[in-house]
Length: 293
Image (cartoon, rainbow, N blue to C red; front, top):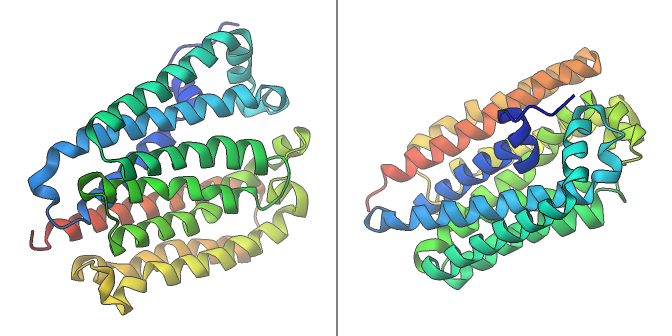
C-alpha cells in the first residue's frame, strides 16, 4: 500500500511536532531579552533558521535509523519511504541545513547561529548516533537538544544570553526525560524488538515509573525556582503560576506511579507533559510581555 502523504506522514519525516515545540522555546527565550519588542523582526529569521535546522536533524535521524525503523511498528511506514528514497533524503537534509545556515548567518549574529548548530548536532550526532543505541540514559543527555533554542532566541537580538533564557533551557532539559519515558513505556516492545536500550525496554515499566516520579519531583522544583530566586527575571505572572504548574506535572506522575496501570495508559501522562511545557512557555512569554521594555 502506498504511503499517504498527509500531515502524519510529514510529521514523521520532519518531526513537525518537535519543530513546533522548538519554535515555542525559541520565542520564549527571545522575549526574555529586554528590548525585544523594538527588534521584533529578528523573530522571522530565528524561526526560519531554527525550524529548518530542526527538520534537518529529523531527516538525519530518519536516514540513520532506517535499519531499526523496520522493526518498530509505529514507524515502519516511514522507514519504507526513507529507504526507497535515501539519496533524495540526503539531498533534502543538505538543503534544509544549508538554507538554515544561509538565513542564520545573513540575519542573525554568530552566537545565535552557534546555538542553532549546537541544537542540530546534539540531536543528530549526540543523541541519534552516540547515545540512542548505547545507553538507557540516552534521552537524559540527548535531551539537551531541546535547550539550545532558548539560548538561540535570547542571543538572536544582542548576542548575549539572559538568566531567564538559561532557566528555560534548564526547564526543557529536565522536562525531557519525564516526557519521553512516558511515551517510551507505551512503545517498550518496539524498542525491545529494535534492540534500542530505552529505559522501559531495559529496566522494565516498574523501574521507569520510579524514574519518572523522581525526575518529575526535580522538574517541579525547577519549575518554582523563579518564585524563590527573583534574579531570573520572570515577574509575578509566572511566579504565581509556578506552584500550580509544578503540581500539574507532579500529581499525574505520582498517580501513575501508584496506579501501576497498563503501558498504554502512559500515553495520557505523555499528553500531560506536553500540556505542562506548552503552558509553562506561554506563561513565560506573557510574563515577559508585562515587564517594562
